[in-house]
Picture 1: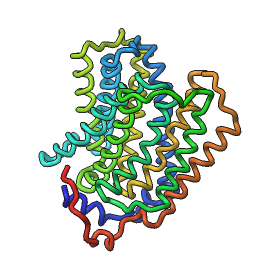
Picture 2: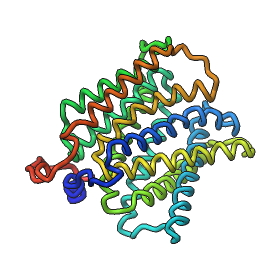
Picture 3: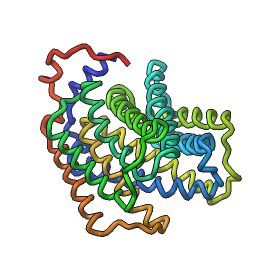
Length: 337
């Protein structure tokens, strides 16, 4: 694993089309819009498939079905485009297993349990910290980049924007629970680990294949675990099946594009766009669910300005691009994963 980290640290933005600022911004925003649409679509899916939202096992079955479909879609698309069956070398299956564990199984198990035990406002705000935590994991744990003042400032500015767009009359007061906000925070750490892993692994293996296989097997694990714990979903109607397939497309397309961006760019340059997820989530929830919201246009505009400012501050940080000089620097021993 140390060799993987060293090779990844040596790799810079490669000058390809996928490393250009405008392309990174457009594709990352596409991913965030898709993930933002998942929030209201999941709620609609719960209704269409009669999922008991008070039952964590049932939610895990629903999530597992979604991610298994996502993996199937990604792998089928790869097979159609490449005209060959998707496969990874035997030596790469450990990468698939670690990604499935960090990205799909552990992250979403903790996330769904945490969401069911945390108020919507505090849960959303804690989850919005995943971009900041991802950069901390990348710089302090995996040491793929340097932690700079601009990155810290950019994350804080973007986080303030997320807080503003979620302040709709709710209260931040009250106790914080381990199985609520604590579990959501753990899921954010898993997100940071998986982002660093895909950044490293994609230097050796096709990120599309890694994405497809990790979703497929991770989804099966969630479905089996939820079923064994007594979870179930209602009869699958055409509308319900269509919504689950759409959610599978959302996950498959968004994560695959995100993984490709991570292959060609420093982690912080991509993950900082994650602050747009809750912004899209709030806006699309109002549009798709026709929810009444107390968010004013001025509040929305201020949030967008702050999030955009945070993205720009971090994205223009020259130190976010690893260099061979940094790679050659003597570093303290790094943990093996």
